[in-house]
Length: 432
Image 1 (cartoon, rainbow, N blue to C red):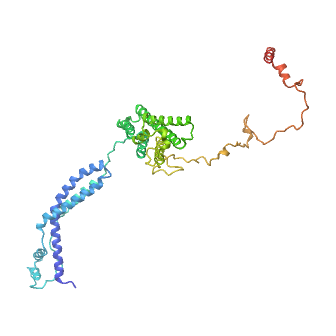
Image 2: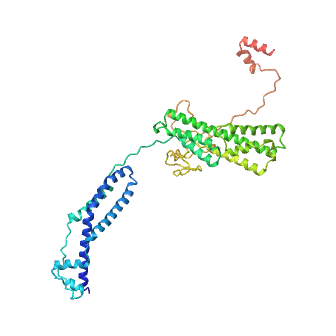
Image 3: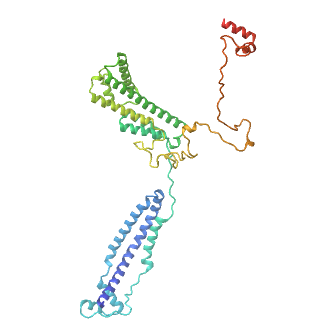
């Protein structure tokens, strides 16, 4: 059974909490309101500028400010806090017990029974105590929930697809080490100059013309470098393998082809790497058969890989710059079949939208439409098609002497009836 001492101690602790919490709310109410008003304006502005990031930062800032103000209020108000013994003195004065609780706590006399209504007589002033925290909470909520129209960021139009395709080529060539960095930097500088102009002029006539010229020059230089690499690799491979078996004229032609390919690489708009050029300059095409087979094969394979990398770039269309480095499809692309449509997602139509497609053999066979209503047919319409065979005359014609024509057939009728007399004279002179 709960004793009188425990009940009086519990009532004293309640009185102590009521007094101490009241002092904390009294001290921290005004700073809390000022803090919420200070955060209101910047928060609304941040929500307009950065609608996605502002709520997260606001939660951190507002939460930290509330914790700091609460700690500061406790630090300032703690000098006015009361203890349990002081709360009992408050109860003695309120209930008129004349120090009976203090003496009972000291063990001098027994604890008195609790009255029917044990009231400490402490009442909070709600306007002075709870109104400031409620107002601060309202301002903090308003800063987060008041509708704010987000600022419309200036939209940048999509740049020409040739820029993205060219930059994708440059990335692939750099990764494969297929061209000299100086040649790639020149092309990258041209793209940067085109992008540096105002976005509104990207699709102007002058900009598109400059873009086309840049793209054509880039493709032409890649194609020329690929051709020269392929020619040099083919001629070097044949000279290394069959130099002794080839005729002198063929061997000399292959040597000239290798030298011309090397000169073309040096004079082209896109040059190979300096390391590859030095290796090719040090090779005498007349002595290719005497070189180390392993080093020569490694050199030829490197040239073939560089030519293949250039070929892949030449096969890229201007709309494929969004693909990754390996040339795979975008994340929204699902392969063959009908798609959702879009610039980066392929066509949105299905290949069998008009029904099942006929095979090539079926497409070559003639088909005829049948009409049951012949009253609507027009002159020239095909009414019926039947399969039939030609009737061949099986009787042999009678033998005829050579050079003798029939009296009523053959060329006689043409000679006698079709030709004009002057034409007959011309034919006679021609055959005389």
